[in-house]
Image 1 (cartoon, rainbow, N blue to C red):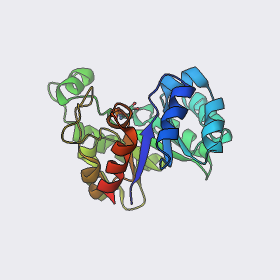
Image 2: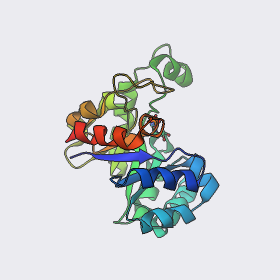
Image 3: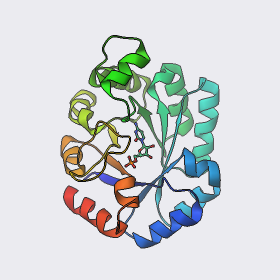
Image 4: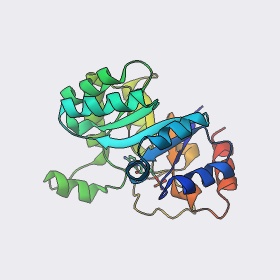
Length: 226
Ligand code: C5P
């Protein structure tokens, strides 16, 4: 069964722990750059102390030596999964995987779920770019470099599961219910759609954090993927 991951896109520690107190069934949390820049690794220890699995989503994209050092720090802090950008290239991805050792997963971001096809084309300097083609190309490169899986929108999950085989981790943000506001996400699907297409980790932020009743929103997501 796919894991639901709560994106702690909140301003500080107290706000994060308050949300977690309200939703005791959360098992995985994602700590991103906003909160981590505020709290540093102290919050990782605190979350681990609560028995949570921690996904540190800092999307590293730097020279191999620097990324290797950052991944080693995350490993030593007890993190369970980290992100790097597939565009960092094979040497950077291999360095990240080597530093992670066996206890921590490394997943590579392919194309951010906020990019539309038109914007991606502009960024790549092409008349046209198809996100799914770029995602597939980057996912193949990431697999060759030996990382554990990739991050993509739910619209590419089925293609990636077929391409990468049963063992790959497929981490999927861009989860939205039919009536949820999309916000800055453009390539979205429901949790049930992503899970049945083969996602292993469904990352959900605003649909839960901004719900009138976050616990009910979480329970409904859990029910939808069971
Ligand atoms: O609020 P929402 O459900 O859109 O949150 C999605 C989370 O997933 C955010 O923390 C965002 O940074 C992260 N993410 C993403 N797209 C990626 C990788 C991570 O939206 N490709």
